[in-house]
Image (tube, rainbow, N blue to C red; front, side, top):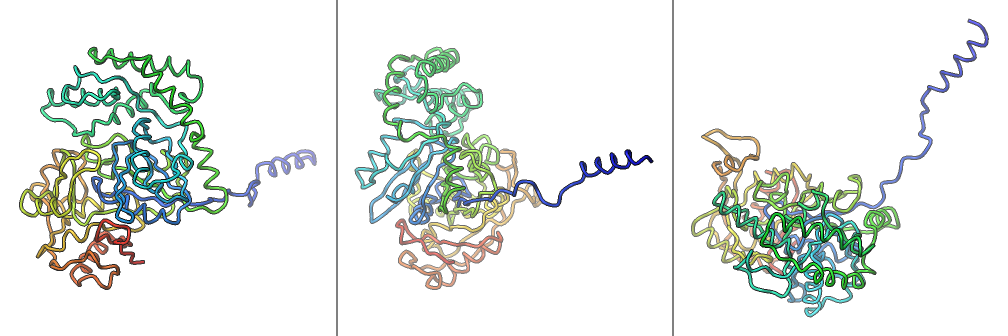
Length: 475
């Protein structure tokens, strides 16, 4: 080989060789968020856990859902109800962030804030950030032809009207409905997926273009539901009024989260709405909500990468409840179910419907853990079990006499499962005033340890009452 060829070969080899060090350093992960998620069908007491963690948080976020969620928090004997606002906003030092994955009913947002202001919430409007990519729940005047059973408010959400019509059609066609909250959440997410939705950034930008998109969306709904009457000009006028109110709250959510994650050290808390078994992909479909209420929804609903997810706390009620219809393997149609409903005051915050009640189902919790990767659990409402002589816990499912290793996806199969229970002794004593784990009755401690050992996840908190002070922290 000639000298020139040897030189060319050497140069080509150098060009294709790999360096042991990257040219640019691997980026720092930055701050990590702490996530609080429901592990059952909702109503587990997530708001109480968020309230506890929000006491030293800098930012508290909502990443999905809408005002179909309901969180109750009790502070100094005052009961606050939240549906859209992150419940951590009670802390006057917290900045609350509503992410792009949330669908926002603007009148509901301001009504909720005003209601809680009368109870003591302060400075919320200066501490609320709203992602410009969040979708809007739109409004029209009430249409009594479509929803004759609804009271006639001066303003009626047409997504809510559509929600009601769809439920009525399902009832007529299949003899059953999905038991939605009729808050219009499903139709908004449907419009989002169909790429015809209206976003906060549209409202805050060119109002002429926003008006045209609003008219297109209204026309689509009118073609599907001919009896729907929409005062387009009136509703656009109402929406325009919100522009000034929202101006200082709306920011680019992706940039806001990036700055929060990669700026100075911050404690960032994410408050999940609904729960794992209501997730649009992993829940008891079709009796689910319209968003991802599991850990993946945190990333897509806030615009942040998965490496910034830190602790993931699953909130588990000490028994199981569910609002509306759908499979519920451990439900109790007996005195136990009645006792749990009565003692637990099991009525939905958002719907006002009585909750169905049953024993704790660890098959269901283990399934939620598979999806979410819980790092610890909060076990709430343990005190409701105080009067029971014995307590059952669902530990496995069988179908046609055969044990199954998984949580069934199909509703008909799930309806037919038989639950195998472990029976544990009760403690027959009042736990509501107890504030340390060691003070709990021995059988109450055994109940907690049984849950931990079966799931392989530690219990970090135990709730024995409604107030902030009634959350026992174990570690």
